[in-house]
Length: 525
Image (tube, rainbow, N blue to C red):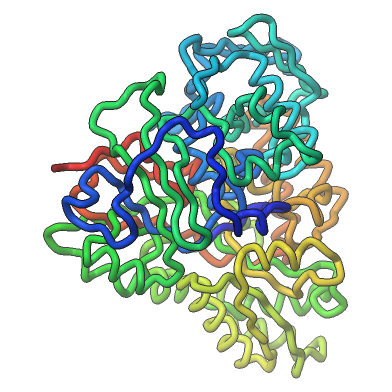
């Protein structure tokens, strides 16, 4: 399930795709097709449909996944997790850190045949800034951009911003003429929610709400094709057991949501399992403004009452790790130093309850339905808290419902269990996005955490270009955040993809968690 910020156009996808801009078409074989009937089609199971096909919302992985086949980004990450060009062939940053120069490919066309130029890049950046949601939270330092000529763009920032280049990996360039033609009164959000304006290897050919999204190869794609699937289908199967059955029967090729307990059945001929370390942590954020959960003693007691190691051993079945603070181990600026991360200590938790008169307290928590890890973690926390006299009431919701609850101070839950999917492997993608107060109500600061000292540290680290200095600021911020018991940092799980052995070339990408890079995959005969 997805964790990042999503606003706006969820209801629009209840209508069929208009497909006005799609140049390709193709028969995906239908939802029941197997074997030869879909020989050229790659079918990927997902547990939640996207709220939009608009790349401005590609900070969320449900949207990112459906955007990736149809659009090209400016930059990307290579197999060694280093920045590399996609639409951009060369880039440089001036000595002030505020002017970025980009050189673009000159052989890229959109799906309607129009050439992609620097003007489209400027339009895309201005549109993101103007709309102010989704990937805009990664580009807060953006001031303006200028098309020098068709293949050269100059971006000016309001101040130096260390992760800005990394953020360009989530800037998918749109066909400016096509979007402007259909801009309406919301800068094209309604139109792009159900239409494709990209230059990627595949065109969108159809969408059936809550069932499937389909794509066909764009014949004039600048990267060409060499054995990739002719058609792509994302099939929305909310239950892990349904995904397992569909994979067994050959109806799908890749599943990323099969329950850990069910994975062993695929340790046999015909299937391949890929388990990859991630930058994804499962959190439960406390509502820092709620009369009950604003009590630091209660937050501390709850944090020490959870069995974190049991989460890794019994829920993830070893496919993950505990964490030290809000950053996953191995991510930039994470630490092994003691920063006060709570461990399972029922005696300490009980003492906090007794000393502060917390016995009999009732707290509510929402989590995402049809997510095995969350369901089991919620039940484990409920059981642990019962042992110290605290009642936990649980409510399973969909991700759009989760976002809607957090859009208002009046409906923000006391606790909310959610993943953070960092869009790039920079500490800012977790610390700045989830704990800076400017994102309360409009971003990913789910706990409404407002600490001026932390804000100053995180915003200073955004401007700092010296890596050691940045990490020192992030370490100080982590210590404060951990000491304030803003979130329970439950576990850092692996991404486990189970697939048919007809799939070749699958690679997990930490910068695009819970997505599949369909262009890198070929299908065996």
